[in-house]
Image (cartoon, rainbow, N blue to C red; front, side, top):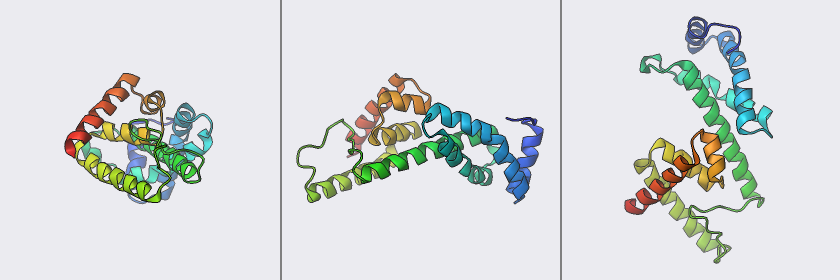
Amino acid sequence: MGDWKPDDAQTELLRRAQGGDAKALNQLVSAYLPIAEAMAHKLFSADCEDMAQEGLMALPAAVSSFDAERGIPFSSYATVCLRNAMIASHRRSRARKRGSGEEKLPYLDGEDGADGASDPQQIVAQREQVSRLMKQAESVLSSFEKQVLSLHLDGYSYKDISRLLHKPEKSVDNALQRVRKKLKYAQ
């Protein structure tokens, strides 16, 4: 992470940034810039500059919410926050495209929705059903299963989800199988 000692210097910068020191926060952001850029390039080679900025915008919140007493290194915590912010930004971007008609709404089981999905009442009913399922999902799915489901519903392939979450495709497939089973029994 740049040219400073991760243990001592980072801990001191973090402490000062949590205390409201804007200069310390700026130093942390500068230190994490290369990490954000590398992560963005690995995950989203096309928009890596924008994605790196999106990730870095999450760093102040990561600094504020970090609790050293949980025993997790700040570098690990910050890296997860950066990646999650980039993925969330990418998902929002895809959702905007979908809303403008550039992309179709993908369904959990890969259905194309051609059976009358242009009927507004049916669309509203489907959205209500998805909303109910998502509420149930919050209580029965693991964090990983929620991430996989969300990315799958956004139209990502198993391969893309695997790459984004740094997990084998088989883990993604297994997670979606568990999601289907859990949601089926939760109804």
